[in-house]
Amino acid sequence: MQNETTTVRHRRELFLYQLMSRLPLGGRYANKIILLSFISTHIPLLALLFYLLATADGLSNHLDVLLVALSATLAGFIGVLLLLSSLVAPISLTARSLNAYRISGTTPNLPTHYRDEVGSLMASVQQTTERLDALVATLHEAANTDELTGTLNRRAARRQLRRLIQRNREHGLEVSVALIDLDKFKSINDTFGHVAGDRLLRIFGVELLSRLRPSDWLARIGGDEFLLAMTGCSHTKIANHMQHLQQLLTEKRFEIQAGERVNLPFSFGVAAVAIDDDLEDVLERADTALYRQKSQRGGGK
View 1 (cartoon, rainbow, N blue to C red):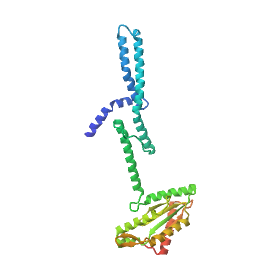
View 2 (view 1 turned 135 degrees about the horizontal axis):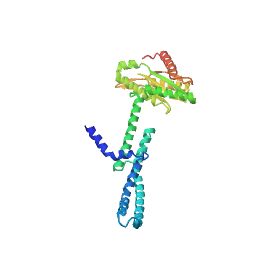
View 3 (view 1 turned 180 degrees about the vertical axis):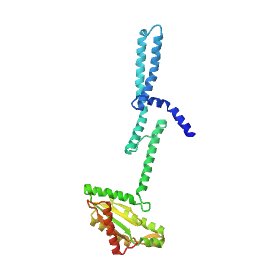
View 4 (view 1 turned 45 degrees about the vertical axis):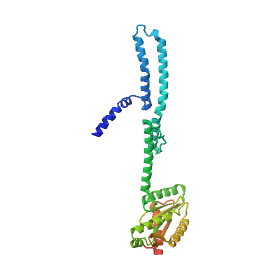
């Protein structure tokens, strides 16, 4: 019932707008304003013309009066048009800004300090698009970030790696990846519990992230398995980097719960991206190298 009442009210409020929208006015709101302005400013002139035609003296004896009235009417009409063009400008600006936001995602930069209806419209559009941007950014981060470690998640990692492989193919960008797996994670998880296990993963993710370059990225792609991608980096260079981290995190001890400290030994496998590689080729080589090292180190779960 409320929806029907609202619809009836909207139809009543938009009656003139709907009626004028059927006229061939080029689809511009300003043209509707111009037409109404033309009619309203010429009503006095038409009234005077009909009056002079109806008088006994006739129109010829009052041409000077008619010319003055016509000149004043045209001047008033032009003045009204100039003023209305300024008043319609905020609506046109809002429409263009919304269209640009819809097409290219460009956030509007509309004023928000005016207090009339049009000012309220501009402020509402500005605030709503800013909130939408914030919401989209939050959703994008949630869709691409591993909640536990703050690294990329598996889906985002595969998408990013595909892009790097394509860039390697098109531009010869040197890319190497390392597949990383924590040693003894299952035994730590079983001994100290899942809360301590989650803390261990967070610590490990933070330690790795803090030692990356801006162009590198890290993703958690499984329970205790991570993928590191480094651009402009050879197989040897990333292997040396990982060996350094391996030694560092094996020697250092981290508190996973009150009174319990552990080190973070891990195994890794490295693969350099070749021009003819696809995603699965790279991951398969890194996985093979990972489990080769894990078996050599005796790094079981």
